[in-house]
Length: 468
Image 1: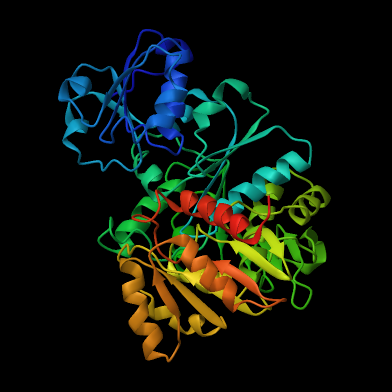
Image 2 (image 1 turned 30 degrees about the vertical axis):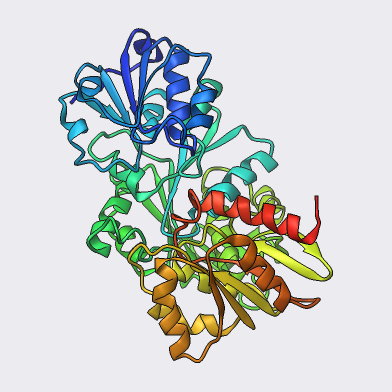
């Protein structure tokens, strides 16, 4: 159905139903945005008012109608526009009421005139998106970061202009909601590593990848696609796009346009022709962020910045000063020679393997949680690296345990509460060790989501070791 929105003025008096308030900011930002611009807003969520207390309180000053603990069909049939949360499945009967359905992303793209750099992938997209945003800011450019990184772009729409750069991290669900709208044509689209994820929602990798492919569906020859040369799915995507493809690679470019990691030093070089003769440094040897996989992520971010017009010196300086993203190999505490890292956003086994490979120090790994139909088998050998493993309870942990036992790898737990798991991990650590939370599973059951898990992990660690 045709969208009723073409200009910001179209919002005044519009009857808008926000489907899914949630706790991560998307529904909250949408409700605030439409209320501020004069729309008549109804917010509906299957969660109770008690569960959504913080979000409801943040909207208290606005004349917003709440329908919580249920959905009423009338709120959808009587609306001019429905804004759905990405977690709401597209086959929901409430979305078939004959009313235009949008998301905060699609509304933003309809109303914004700023160039967009869009990033998607299974792992690494938050790091890449955050690094690109940091690179712009470090160079003194006006830039905004939003999307799947838990910041709705509607929260900054009123601040941007055509000279701003907007960096959007987009999940497969967010991309699926944009299908057929013709609103997403990123100046630069960046692909990170593709691997099995959300297999509890998708029937196959092909179905999952079909949504990822939407990032370049409306690009043309004036746009850029930044693809990982060392990822099989990225190769497939690059063969289909109408955009100009630039590669980022582990080794020399073999004449391909893009960027590569120099053998030995690890610095990143860029050439629009793939030739050493005109190569320039866009990624320095020295980085704050640990891990070979993160060096590769930052190479992709640097390439996107260079294609967006940032000069090579500014690009390299920005990447060299980037400290990382909360909940992604985040170093946050040290006491008595033991360092603590929060990698709560590692929600698939491959992310755990990548995290373990990032450290040279002895490791105590805290891992496990809820299953989402993922397979630990392909990376099971990675679990040999930690000197000790502490398991959090959950259905995913029950899949991991027999694999560990089959390899002769001992573990402590599973623990049904975080404090017990942390005290067990600390009892195994000596000065010089690293304690790493990298679950490889979702967080549902013990925690609200992976960000809640990471925050509670950091809070509990600081309580246990006596840091303020």
